Length: 257
Length: 159
Image (cartoon, chains in turn blue, orange):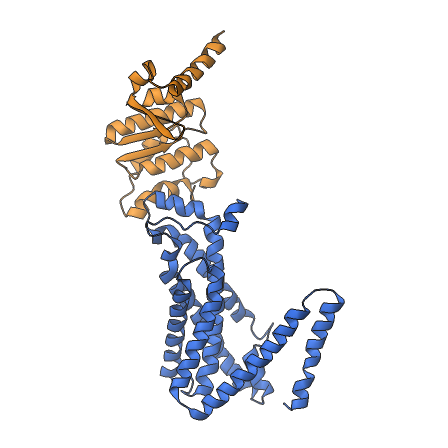
């Protein structure tokens, strides 16, 4: 893409800003911040990738994967800030999901062990796992408001923490996986995925692009399942106090009740 | 009530602890709580308030606890069911050798179900002692007033 063409893309920002001003949505500032941030972040990662592809040093690949996991855990963890230690659990989960997925992809020689493959695919895996983790956590928070009675009744009947919270965990795992699975059902009919679109625009054969997209869809399904189940298993105890009482709801909820 | 049928609710304790479900015992307790007519395949959420309260009580009993803490356990029951529950619990305590601590505002109930009274008021334990002795001559003014109120009401009713 020429520099002139790139600069012309700002016309879309102008449309957004114009609509916001005209309809008094008050989003101009956010639009400006969003535009500047996405441009800077993408340019930054572009140069970083350029550098890594050139050096081919595995240390840089690991570093970039770790920082992806770090940012993703921080972001998903803000859904349940009040649960102490949740960000660490998310980071462990994302690292395991990413590690296992990559091991399989490389082990079966599905993708080549080069940064050109590893980094973008990891980005997709970690990014989608972050969304799954986020949905799981917000669903658990809702569950523990609506199903508080159920959990406490079970505890009163002598259930362990795991037994008492099992129902809520199962429902939350399901809800966190549904978007990914629904995405599999409609992909290609409703939306053309970004990666595939990108490959086609960049000149790849659509059939080749589709083959990679199939790989991505299946990888996403398994990483959604891995993330949701792993996170639920290593984090369920965090919803209880040391002496196995449910942690109280955050203050704003208690006030409302 | 937990999700599921009456039966699933009653089976909860044995399910959680991996012990066999004593259906005979459950049926007997349900009958004693005047719930013998209840269809066990009915969803528990469809029970009435009093039915829920009694089913939950039976569900707890099936844990066979050696100590029962009964907090206003007959509060939403009609007089007949209330009496049935009191009798059921007393029989249960005798049979199982379980201790019961009743928390109640109901003076008649405390007189009929207990051996010992702990009278609480103003956030303090004001009296503790034998039930008979307590009702014959409470040592604090608060307890005296509390005992007299229902008696006065009865007297008013008679006039």
